[in-house]
Amino acid sequence: MPGVTHDDAPLLADLMPWSVAPPRLGRGWPAAPDAACLTARWDALVQAVGPDREALFEPTRSRTLHTAVGQLPGRSGGTGRLARAAGPCPAPVRVLRAPFDEQWLIPDHRLIDAARPELWRVADAGQVFAVETAAVPGGTGPLLLATSLLPLLGPGRVRPLYRRPGGVEPNLAPGLTGLLADRLGHRPDPVDVLAWILTAVRPGPGGLAVPLTGDAGLWAAGVESGRRALWLMRRDGDRPKLPGGRRPYVRAPLPARPLTLHYDRDEETLHLDGGRISPVPAAAWDFEAGGGRVLERWFAARTAEAEPGTLAAIRPAAWPQAWTSELLELITVLTLLAELPPLRPEAAAGAPITAADLRAAGVLPVPRTARRPASVLDFHEEGPEGQFALL
Image (cartoon, one colour):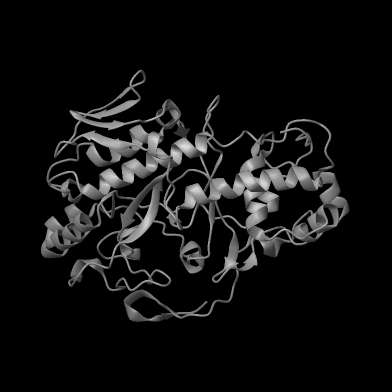
């Protein structure tokens, strides 16, 4: 992408200053690709007693059956000790468990070692989480993912686009959009800024860097590409589709419990044991994120063996039809993302806006308050053992 240098590009950590470490489950069983099996796992846990319940739970230093914690913001999970928990499973919620892998989670604070309540407080339909992926030397995958779901993948930081629910108070350096307005001739909205960031972000000596431009044409091209990437990653509107001749279909039925995944480049066919899906472009098969092929990791998350007798071993008896639909859509998403033009800032001209420019304008350094979560929210939270938590 001609026009923007990255020699003195501002850091992502300064442009989106509030960030949170990714949630850490501490045990794998509260999350799964299938919601029904989570309910079955919960039922098995609460039906067990004494040492059996403790073994199934898989205690850690952060969570045991006797740990007292508050309710997850906006959720109805219990706050009493798990040692005496009974009753139905909290309704599972959709989360991003791995790059491009949407799964389900039991939203109960007692099951999660580090839930990051500050993320749950701002998670709603209008929120977008920018998630840093694992840096891999020579890797080709995206450096940032964007999702409307609560992200449960590490190790990179999570940067919400908004600091409060309802799309209020953008998590952008104070004064940034005003400076961009002066240079571009219009004030970009927060989603446009995030779209540009997705397009322009690249590794830098001090962390992820985001070259900025005051060239309105260059900005518009980057935002257009970033907006499409946002739509494909979030998948929260119209479902993406490929033209009829390129649309992947199941050509041979998938077995009840596929064990192997193989790709035939010559035939553009994905083999799940004897099942076949085609056409699958090589770009979709080769698409990486976080240092591995997305399709391989997605399949492994649904077929890897679990230790017998554990809650994680409670799984669907056969491959659900919903997984096939998700796989077909994932192939489509990866294909379309791979086809996005490489609009990345690389040349030295094009009205660059440098970190020095931001410092001269007073945008940098950002105030300390911008790096902390909003302190006042509009709902009550239940603390341990039913007490009210104060914010």
